[in-house]
Length: 251
Image (cartoon, rainbow, N blue to C red; front, side, top):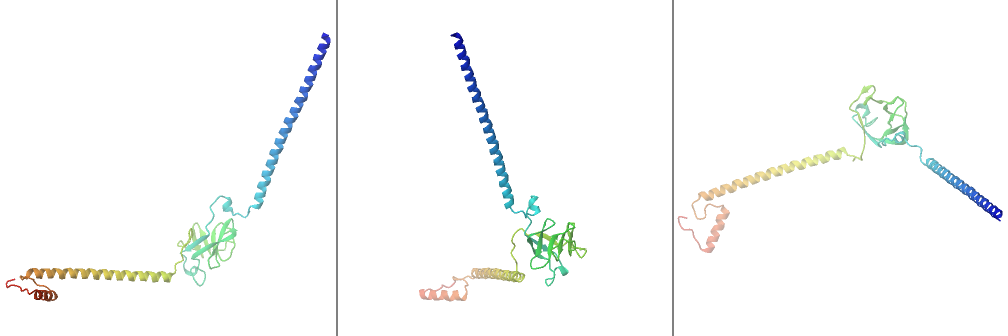
């Protein structure tokens, strides 16, 4: 009897151990499966992110100028040139003074290009690493105007009065003839105002003098009515006649 009980206990222990082993193996397999699933999900997510980024890069425009890629400010859309004289300020020929507009979509040596408004001249950054004004849209170092260390030279002569500045705001176009006419009208109005002011002052001074003299005359006359103007004397006579009054002698 004791032998049989011992045998049964060993059998039960073996069964429990076998079940525990099976459970352990199942748990390990489940853990491995979950780990593998997480890894696969992470890899899939990474692949999706990469593909999305690639898709965005493919759709995004690639023709960005170098100054944008380098984090620099966008170039001005307009420039203004001042100070040119002689044949480079000929309204019937080549006049570089005035507004220059950017040529969108066109760069030379990673710099924007500009074209003279109403003209055929260009401002570019040439192959010699200098800004130049040229009659053709090219980087060849053959421009008629070259910027040398900040000073513009034309036909080999330095012209420090020539300035190229960005236009940062829309400026009103002024008609010289209209501006001159407006200035002349304003000057005329100012002269007329000065004349009127002078006359008013003279009239006021004369009125003061007249009134002062009249008061002085009345003060110096020893009569009842004093010395008044002819109109006032006649008015006084009519009033006294109507009232039947007379001035006593001595007054």
